[in-house]
Image 1: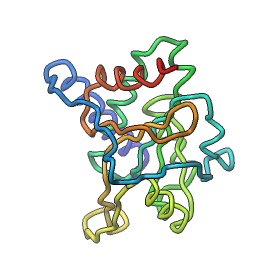
Image 2: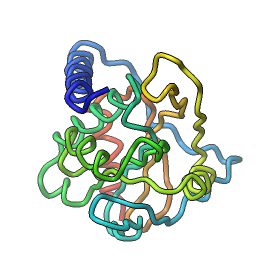
Image 3: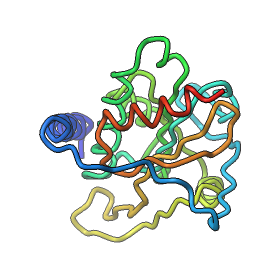
Image 4: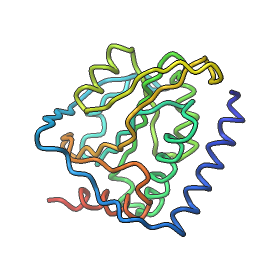
Amino acid sequence: MSERILLVIAGLLAAAVLGLALFWQPELPERPLPAAAALSGGDFTLQAANGPFSLHDLRGKVVLLYFGYTYCPDICPTSLAATAEGLKQLTPAELAKVAMVFISVDPERDTPARLKEYAEFFHSAMLGVTGTPENLAEIARRYGVFYARQPVATAGGDYVVDHSADTYVVDAAGKLVGKIAHATPPDQVVLAIRKYLNQP
């Protein structure tokens, strides 16, 4: 799939998300972390287009983490578009205290350069990163992320990647504090972000 076609599809999905946000407002409260899950979260280092990126580089900001891949046909564009619309509703002062990181679990196809172009299409404050399969698997385990490669003959590269679709929230101190469910409307994404921005 060419970059242009990919961006056109992402743009169409973003428009669909905006339409849903206007006419469909389900109650999708933030999902607290299960007490028994013992998700540790924590710091990590991955590769961005401009070099190594570590989560601690964003200490002092509320960070939204999303695990997916750029060839994802629908789930990733939908989630990223909704989150981007939420970011656009923040004030400039609020936005300066928030970051969004898109972590690709498909390093075979998602180069750092491709991730930069893809993430910035949704929002200029969104950073795309990836790493080795071993590093990604270890990070995913700590955050409770599921993903698995599935063969599909008609897909680009002959496979797709099934993956969980929550957005993980890391507070300004670097602690994993919650998740935002897939398909949460932008106005509720804003509420979830402000909840952690306004914590003492």
